[in-house]
Length: 92
Image 1 (tube, rainbow, N blue to C red):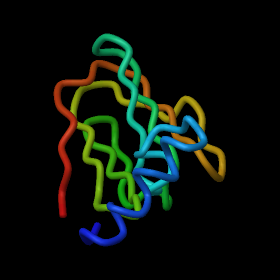
Image 2: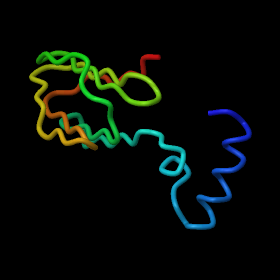
Image 3: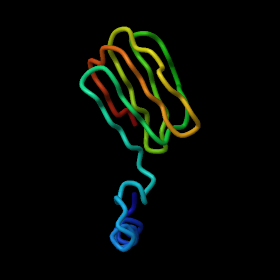
């Protein structure tokens, strides 16, 4: 994100008491232990196997590696991955 955009978004986020990442459109990742990962918003899956799932986002690819990976939920906004998650990487 460029510097001017960041300078404008921060006061807006504070004014409406919103997280700056939400206002900037950054993806949100939540991990529950090593067994579940939530990503929103997303731009679809780029690859899907039981050992690696690549999730497209507006700011790069989220690469999930592990064993027994499964797609628990996928809507137009969110993806939930289950299984034994070994690593989560940002790939630009």
